[in-house]
Length: 338
Image 1: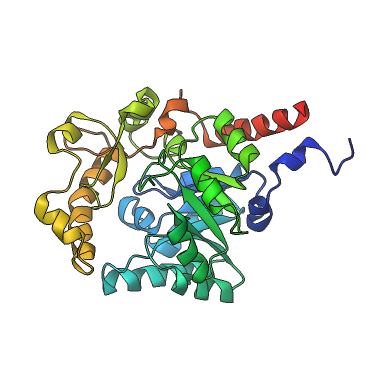
Image 2 (image 1 turned 45 degrees about the vertical axis):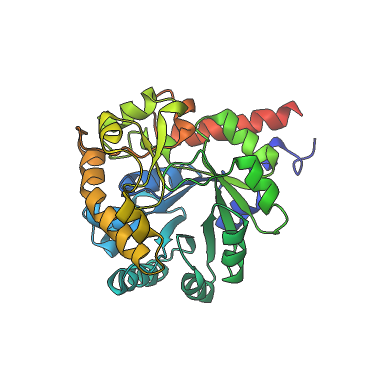
């Protein structure tokens, strides 16, 4: 076997080349769990940590530019920024645009967009030679993202945490595979076997969130981390009561009490072209305090614990670097076997 054909090449994909990372593994942005230490730890280990700006500022108490400086002190390796582009209000959009401008000034060149038209992000980032990947759950959103100029797609499947999709990982791969852009598998990957399988099946990288909550670097409460370790796939349910859009959470007595569906008035508002943005904002404001409290301290009765069905493969709380290394080793072992 030549050096060019070494097993190490199994970790080199179009995503790892584009992002200049050693392992094609992205730590997805999470509100409220994306603290600077977690983002930096994943990047330092060879993956790509993604900053969630509202988490950085409003949960973990950093002024945005100062928060980026904190991450830079922890790692010199690349990190990315998440931009939720839904136009819920002018104040929100102005804030997001400011975050993108500062991130570009500070050298960030990878951006992950979601929940809206990413054109304005693409225009800003491409001017600086950066890349934009866009979250999608089906072909029509992928087509719209590509029309806006995105460079890659994060295929969010029905096992994901956060805003999960409706389709399986293989179904999305089949549906999007002809688009000739990098595809990232998001959802359901909690152990090294699933990671290796996603790459072998044709994905160019994997994005994980839930697995990285159960790490020492994440500032989520120990109760939250233990709940993830204890949970199984069947314990994950979708609720509309956080943002108005289905979100994956661990089933708790509180979730059972309040239910998972929007009420009739809220559902009517959520289907209006303009009112859907207002209703989602109302839901978000109601849930933000609960999410913040339950995640960064300890959870009680009125809590939502976001997690995906990847909990099935999470057996312990362990360092992010150990997770990245173990996942990379699984791919290398598989490559040596062929």
